[in-house]
Length: 224
Image 1 (cartoon, one colour):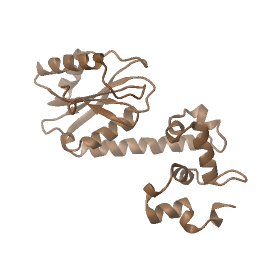
Image 2 (tube, helix red, strand yellow; image 1 turned 180 degrees about the vertical axis):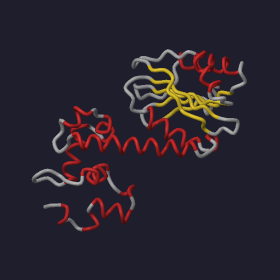
Image 3 (cartoon, one colour; image 1 turned 180 degrees about the horizontal axis):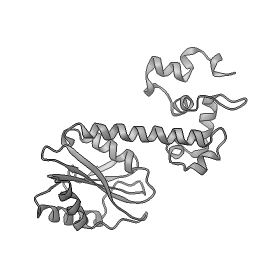
Image 4 (cartoon, helix red, strand yellow; image 1 turned 30 degrees about the horizontal axis):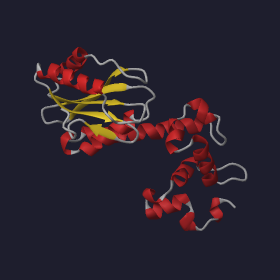
């Protein structure tokens, strides 16, 4: 049976239009993206098979081109489309940050950082540079490391903050392990960065540690 033979309320596209995207399962959302299945298999059945093969929706989205193209029903065109969708989501979140005061919308900052850093295979340290009204000037990835850590140089952070004429910064880095708990080294480098930036009258507003679909705030836990 093809999906056109399903009751209209059960077809993913019609269900999305009538109930909204949150009403759909991962497989149903993926089926809309796939559009078609394979011989003898609907798009929803193919989507369920792919989610099982990659372990989860996140596993599918993290797959590289070789891994994705090796899966049945997929290929270079689907990989390119999927990467475009992910980049559109990142840019959408980035534009939301650009429009307002980050301290008034900490959840948007969290979502952006989780989307940008959460699935990276190695540790990355970045800064959000802010103006005097705490509006975003720019986002920069400054240091990259192995899965065990990144070497963060306070002098370079200060140099980039002065370059952007920033009045404040929000620091962030990811833990590829998925555990969003600050290590002793994280707390030490945060103190060093705060002291270095204070010398040039730039405030550290927060440091976010990004893990698996979550981010821990130094400010909220009294660690700044």
